[in-house]
Image (cartoon, rainbow, N blue to C red):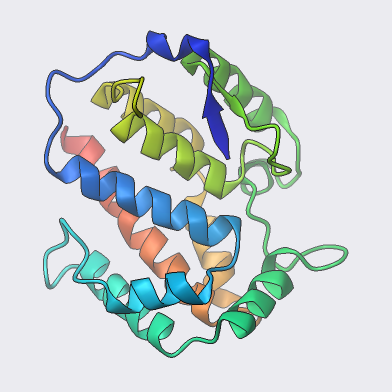
Length: 213
């Protein structure tokens, strides 16, 4: 995951925060959490008991994906989901599914896109936490950056919409469809197929919103 440095003052705050931004930040946080580590029994229960996703029209793909995830969480066993996570994303040797952007953009890990990402993060005043073992192009780290850009924190104001759009287009939009497709087609996933469907529906909505913003 990511942490802010003293340079976060370079962010340009928005004039006013839109009501839907809280829901967007919350969805980014949930996707980041689910891809960073398998959910606990408590988190599965919280997802199952949650209401309709905020900001999603009842008939939208996002609402449908959220309903499917809630149903999957209601019937899921935390130990089984952890085993699924390990089998799909952490297997010894080559994992069936990589969660790193460089792989989907270039076919290799630790390539030029990661260098460019690190340069962009440095300009934003962000860096990888010392306690994190994942590289900055991990899907969870990128979602965490988007959450931070949208919501800020106790010290840093939210970033301008243009900054959110630029980061998303440079570092998430080029490869998230390939990641979601890989998760949805591998035989190693069941619960995480629902997570991938939610992520795809949410990111597709972000693409559409940024195009008209």
